[in-house]
Image 1 (cartoon, rainbow, N blue to C red):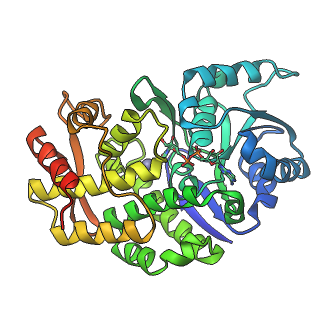
Image 2 (image 1 turned 30 degrees about the vertical axis):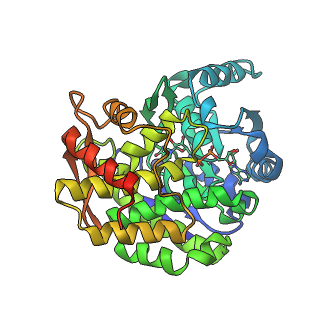
Length: 368
Ligand SMILES: NC(=O)c1ccc[n+]([C@@H]2O[C@H](COP(=O)([O-])OP(=O)(O)OC[C@H]3O[C@@H](n4cnc5c(N)ncnc54)[C@H](O)[C@@H]3O)[C@@H](O)[C@H]2O)c1
Ligand SMILES: [Zn+2]
């Protein structure tokens, strides 16, 4: 069992528990970090089928009265309509919920972001815990307290910062996760490599086969390292005020634009981020901060992990550029990008549209 602390002030600090089989200890962790005796599991049917009983039994053993609510699968349901349905379902529970109720987010990033938002807002805020079931959620979205939903074309435009009481990561839950989702999660790990840890990036390339096969030890090790790296950033800039936390958005400016342009249907989040990271590297080359060797190393890593690298023909550069102006990092309509100066070191910069266009053109032409 490894524990990664997330150090925050005013009693908001918490721990990430990582261990094979830790789903069975969920109840203990919840009992130790909250004053609740009632837990509501929010999850999706495809996850509930495999893992809900284990989660519920562990909570019951620790003395919780447990209820579950299921909601539909897919990024396109990550919106306020689904949130309203969840509020309705909570409202109809008897006896009525009080503010001591604990929300348990059992799922990937979509479940975690929405359950977290429900917890942040229902009855002005309930405790919640994250039990991530996708690799992406284990290495990224379950840690750091960003919750929310998409709104119109904007990804995660509505939301709140609300930290979980703890995060319980059981890598064996990945046994039922499709391979494509594993690859998608690995894209966020590549991101940590570029922004913070060149050693991790090299390890990803070396262990690509093991990781893609779902090797439990290899996966547990990169989950732990990713959580440490994310915790470091969150501790330093919890609410994205100093600009430091924004480094986690490397590859996400174009990545989010791609997801939005294709209506969240074509790409997994990590796939769009993989393509977006390559665009960011090529844009960085145009700005004159990113060395071309870095771009090549990034591309080689993405290819080794079976991630997509090409921009789609049916989404134009102008569409992508227009969507980046809506990005949350944009200021006064000017797109800001996280650009890599060297492996492990990035910076937030305003990039003139002309250079964004030039980077995207180079990306489309292939760049060997
Ligand atoms: N809050 C943050 O800091 C943050 C960070 C990164 C990403 N995100 C968000 O995360 C979301 C993407 O999350 P995701 O990639 O986990 O996708 P997801 O939550 O949609 O899960 C992917 C699919 O896998 C299924 N699934 C999940 N776990 C399973 C399991 N163990 N076995 C079988 N099926 C399983 C889900 O039902 C779903 O169909 C995006 O909305 C993104 O914005 C948030
Ligand atoms: Zn992401």
